[in-house]
Length: 468
Image (cartoon, rainbow, N blue to C red; front, side, top):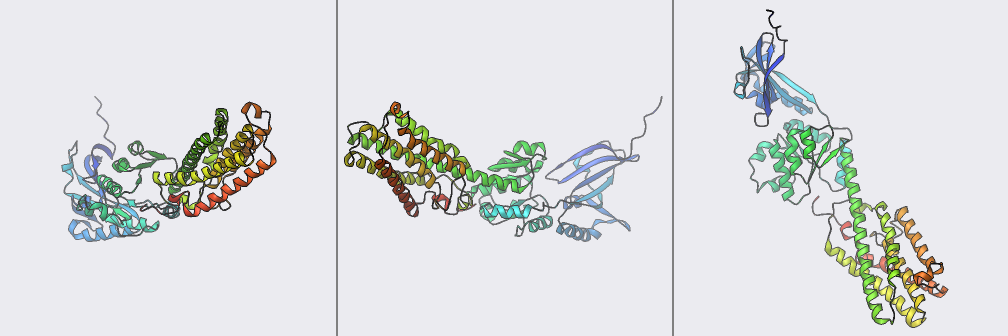
């Protein structure tokens, strides 16, 4: 009977998997005819299970070369290399391997890997800093490599290592890490502790990770971010998976998110203010007039026309100060905006009411046409003027917003003169009334621009948040 062919040199027999406590991985492989245990991992963890070291002069006790090995390790790490230790031990006749077999090993060398940051990382970090986003480096690599990488991307500060984190109680940790930029030699649970402590400080925390050891931190972050080349565990734990491993993508996302948030606030503030002003004006007019100030079909059309420019608000520009810092919704500022600018709208509406009813004594259909034009034009112009703390001439709306706004004002003014005027219950406006409405519109713009200096439309866009 023909025997089995001999195993190929280097054939793997068994494995003791890596874990974050041991910080080592061991393989039992066949070296020729004899099994040999090969261990790699963090250098200090490998040194802990070594008794000897292989040198050019032969195998010597580890203590004779330990300091030289550590100096070489520090030198490589200071260059930014990721350094692992490699050790071996013969295990004649072994067919399995256990963690307890990692003992009395011989250090045979150091494995150095270069993993430099992207060339554009420093610029992206500066860009994030300009938007009030603090970037911190949290890594399991040794302090020397972490310090080198941090310095290469303009992150300053002495690394805080995992051993110091372990010695710090949870209640003291938020204050301890407040100003720490670089964390090194941390295990996965310590990464999670760091993020939890930052969140306890009131910070909104995003975490970018792509390894198995990043999964706990990705879960702990407000926003877990990974990349499509990451391990499956990291991608499943992340809320966002980037197709491009680039900090600029994150900066672009933050900028776009803040612009969207700003434009959403514009809609809420202006629409709330206009609705408040219209309701109060209509209620007062209903008490003062012997007829309905506007018919139901006119109110419905008014709402339809004035809402069209809001559909293009997402294309609007945001001023630099509106996207420079993190922001939140403040209901009190929205209420103040509604009361201040809604009151201006009410005053303008009542001014037009008095002029039409008790000065010119216009017919009912002319009154309704004038109020219809004035209501619609006022709300659209308020959107264009109050979208920014800056003056209207210094902060131009987007082309789509300005175009739809001007188009709808033109349509509104033209409706009383169109064939649709009779079905809508409107009548052509005399030139003097049109001129008066134009003058009142200019007064409305001036009043809103003046009020900006006293009550900024967007107070959250004029001050820095307490902490990024």
